[in-house]
Length: 71
Image (spheres, rainbow, N blue to C red):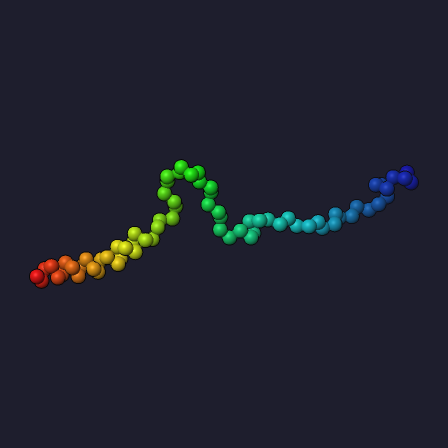
């Protein structure tokens, strides 16, 4: 059939289309999930300030104990 092009044209590969851009390739860290205002659970990260106070107070308390033993 002269009007039917499917039978006469050779099969050509499909032209390369644009590749999909994935956001996961660019995201380095994940965002924390939103929390409601009345959520009283502790956050995942433990705060460092209590440890800093203990580290600073330990030599002071040690010196006070040594001085108390000498007096």
